[in-house]
Length: 249
Image 1 (tube, one colour):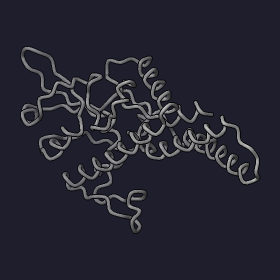
Image 2 (cartoon, one colour; image 1 turned 90 degrees about the horizontal axis):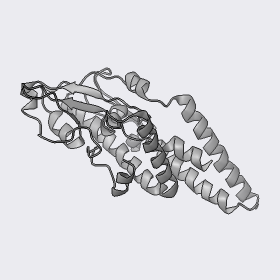
Image 3 (tube, one colour; image 1 turned 180 degrees about the horizontal axis):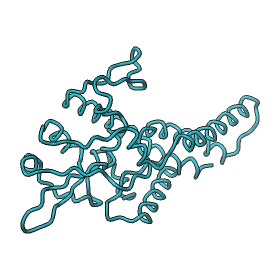
Image 4 (spheres, one colour; image 1 turned 60 degrees about the vertical axis):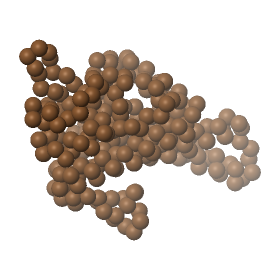
């Protein structure tokens, strides 16, 4: 139960393009290990990514004049929101998560002496480019993002039902005055934290291996920052990584 909860809850970022599936699998195994050893750190990481995804979503919609997200009911705007503007062009929380996990790569225009260079579109760079009219972000619908994801509603539903059933069983036993073993108590604590983590990563795509490429022309390339993040392990993913995440990558 512990390993199932940890395995289902973790949503790793997109690996470097030259990394194989074996290393991507090992990366997720290490994240599962951290979800068991230090679940509160994984939860904090998920919360920060969730907040950043919403910030990216609103930043894009406001900069591109597609509207913004308004509260749907009283103060519960952070749980339930509705977009304004063009539905096909408006970014959602899925788009924010996709960018935050390294879903977009900038391809610099080729020169006479070298081949085109690629770099991950980080949060800091996105803040600059989103206001540049020369930068055209490829139209990407929510359905296309979900198609890239390896998770589906059935998998999520089964994981939620199993976790909920275990938690309810432990609560019922406690109400009846029945004893819980130390292993069950530890599993209950981990299952509860992993369930909360799963909530904040609900809209984050799972298991995406290939990013979307944005090809720059010379005009837009002159306005971009000159960074050396060539989609390597040192690439910045939306200023969200805690020091312990370096052990995962």
